[in-house]
Image (cartoon, rainbow, N blue to C red; front, side, top):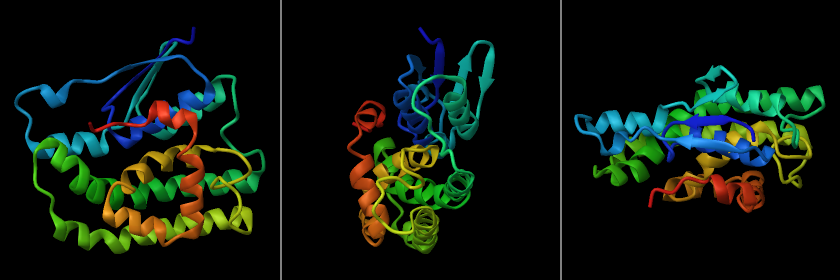
Length: 219
């Protein structure tokens, strides 16, 4: 049995991506979540930051990793199973570029504001700040447009089910939890609907059995 331990906020998008990678690789793993949501002494802002920004941690064979992208690459390269990075150098570069756009541009607007305000705030008992959401919508749309265009560079069209190449990649895994939450918000649903490419992608990847096992549930 593969002795992999993942930890972090189970409802966070970063942790969901790490779990999805394990599911796609067919790896046995254990998951632990620090029970901060039931602990005393935490402000609402602290819990919101925890859900939005906390990176997963991975422990395996004496190795500790504390960054999602490092964890995703380690899971893909250290273990057997489906390969989650494109073979062609061009597609691998586009995958890496999409992951950078997700990290640097999409996460601050999508996770840090839209998802935080629409979903995490009510979950934690707080009130949604509509004005804050409105201010970041241009950045959200620009980030999704950049991802769409990078994907089109890989496929020269819109028919593939995946962002780059012919198979699921780390870029798909990193984006899927974010879009899943966005689709539960009116602003996110509209932003995804504006992209034919990402709409088709979402329909295809959201049906994967691995996602049904890894997806977070705010309950």
